[in-house]
Length: 141
Image (cartoon, rainbow, N blue to C red):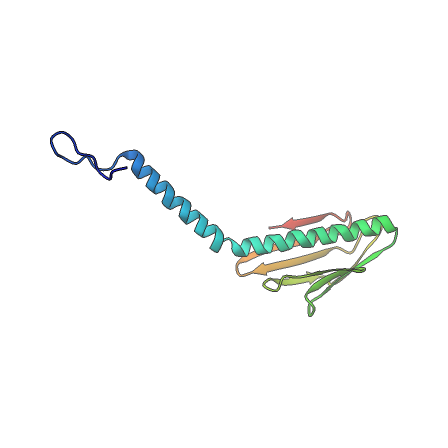
């Protein structure tokens, strides 16, 4: 597509509105993709880790329900991992994590002492909570 068009009198008309809109759209798309790949990386890492921890805690609760026995869940800060019976979940090396309390029991009814795992990478923070009464696992942003 030519940059400019010539009228009969030899004068240039300039850019068409659609050409300018297409150029702006391309620049916006490239900027958005750059932001998502560079700026959104911390957010993606923390949210992915939170989802994995939530699934791990839900599986521990299910294990207690199916076996009819309590399941002990512990967080080892030095080893950077959660343990529930024979299952373990290592925390990602690029994510800071803290859990309170660091040890709970989940009963077959789902009741437990409650747990909160706080995850952080730079400015991005997410928490995974295990409700003490209902056993509900929730990711809190």
